[in-house]
Every structure is written in structure tokens, then in C-alpha cells.
Picture 1 (cartoon, rainbow, N blue to C red):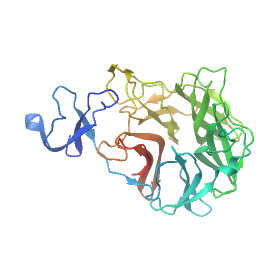
Picture 2 (picture 1 turned 90 degrees about the vertical axis):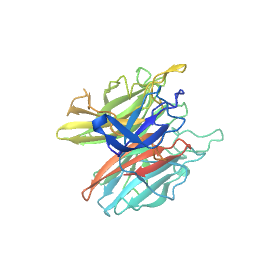
Picture 3 (picture 1 turned 135 degrees about the horizontal axis):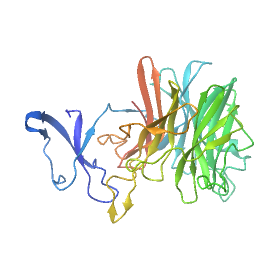
Picture 4 (picture 1 turned 90 degrees about the horizontal axis):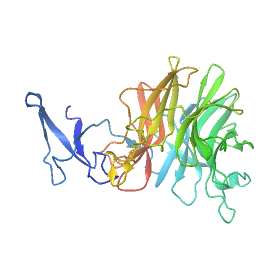
Amino acid sequence: INRKWIIGQGSGKPYYDAGKEYHWPILRVLPKYNALITRPVNEYFSLEKPVVFWKLGPYPIKFSDSLKGSWGFSKIILDKKDSLFKTHLFEFGTDQSNLYLATSKNLNNWTIKRSLKLGDFKNISRNVPDKNQKMKFVPLISDIVHHNKKYYSFAYGDNTKGKSYISVLISDSLEGNYTSHPITLFSSNPKSNFSNRGVYFPKIVYSDSLWLMYYTSKNEQNEEFLCVARSNNLMDWMVLKENILIRSQGWNASMKNLLCAQVKIINNQIHLWATGTKNVGNYKNPNKGNPMDICIGKFYTPLYSNNFIEEAGNPIFGGNPTFDFENDHIGGTFQEITYENYTYTFYVGKGRSGKEYTILVK
């Protein structure tokens, strides 16, 4: 414990008791007396409530000051055709949503332009129109794969029956033009207790002539599970296993908010980052912790195995209690990139003071 840490307390009220609603900086540590000195506390501090120690990392910056409202991103790739970093951006929480493309030479400064608009999907019946048969939302892209001179942008959305599905957009360039594959890659499976309501948010990784897709499924009880499928060509997929991650009794005990945030192959192991939330329990007698406190934990397994092991110390990534853009929780969109001896972490955060999600960079 040092001055990079703070102490926090919750409000004692259901849904607002994560131990970070009120916090105070640590000014000095006194090991000899097993004590520490903080800034003066106020009426919110109570000796009857638990104290939480938070270690603060570096503060992030906003991806772009030009983005207003709530935004997410797909996957950042380095396009070898022009040596530019590129990713899709999408709005959410709005009446209409379009898809944008952001490009950068250095991961710091980004140029943004609209890539796909609603009219580009007007003839795709599986996307949900409104009551006047007008499209309002484009499919959301969660991953990009460059293979055989083609770009495969893996997307997800809802069909007219309210079931979510996974599809793919194919293009010669991320600037367009995009062709939507006429056949849905994955959709709800009525025979499965894990995916009878839908599938979404795919992440792809390649190993030894085999593509693996990690995605989220949902059942009719709105419970979410992580699943894996394989393919030899990115178009034909076979489900290998549903419900591959075991919930803990703590940070990811809830049956909701489970997404594959990132997946990598490192030293013949599959490393998977996944979101999770605590279980609120009974509202009148809730478990400690904010159930909307989405964090990210890490899991690993040997190649060709689906028996994932949770790493010690989870969760490994969460919102900074002292930063207004992420002091409520973070989202499932997350990516680490190493470039010029620096590690860049891109993610989405939400503050307690508003409803907007902001793309952030560390």
C-alpha cells in the first residue's frame, strides 16, 4: 500500500455498494503503527461499513473528442495495404445507428468517416426494421479478419423474431464496398439450453490452419454463456462446446454480462479475456458489490482444449473509481496492442453521472 492507492466505501444501499461510491486519497503509510493517513473524511465515512483498497493505474485519454454520445469499436488492425491502423466505430443508445471507419498512423490521432449507412442493409431481411419497415440499426461488428486478400468483418444483430445471430461482411477493403454473406453463420438453436434465444459478439483466433470463434449465447431465461466453434474457411462453422467458462462465486457469479473481450494464442496456450459481474442476490438483502460493476478477468487453456482455468487475481481490469468516464463500469469492448515498445489498451467506460459509453485509451 502506498500513495498510488485510495480507500473507498459504498453507500450501503442496494446497487450502489461497490466500495467506490465514496473514496479518499492515502497521504502517508505508517508501517510501524500499522496505520495510514488519508485526507480528512466526511459524513459519508462510517466505521460500521467495510473499507476497500483500490490501486489506481494510469489515467486514460478519450479516443476522440469529436465523438458525442455512446460509442463502441470493433477490432483495431494494422492494414498492410497502407500501413494504417483501422477499426469500425458504432453508435448505440440512439434512434438510428450507422457504422464508421476510424484510421490512424500511430494509434494516437484518428480520422473518422462514415463507412456503412442504414440503406446498405435494406435488402437483408434478417435485420430488424421498425413498424414502417425502415432500418434503424446496422449490424454491430465485433471482429475483423484479413485472409486471402479479403476482409471478413464479423457482425451480429437481431432478426424479426427478436433472436440474435452472427453473420459476416466481406470486402476487398475496409473502406468498402461490403457484401453481406447471404447465409447467417450462427443463429439461435431451439434444441440448446444455452443458445435457444440467440448468439452474438464473436471473437476469432487462428491456429494451425484452424479458425476458432469464441462467442456469447443466450437462453430464454436471459442467461449468457461463452461458447466456441471452429472453421477451416471462415464461412462454415461447427460448434465445439457451449458453456466453456465456469462462473466463480465472486466477480463473475452473475449469469449475465459474459462476453469474450479478447482472445490470443501465447506459447501454445489460448488466453481469453472475459467480462463478468457479481450476483446481486435478494434486493432486500443484497450481496456486497455493485451488480453492474462489469470487470474483465483472464482465463487460459492448452491449445485444442476447452477446459479453461481462471487466472489468479481476477478480475484484472476494471473501472477507475476516481475517473468520471469509467467510475461506474467498463464495457466488453477491449483490446491490447503492442506498438513501438508501448502497450495500448483500448476499452469502453461508463461514468456514474451519465448514460454515455466513451472509448478510452491507456
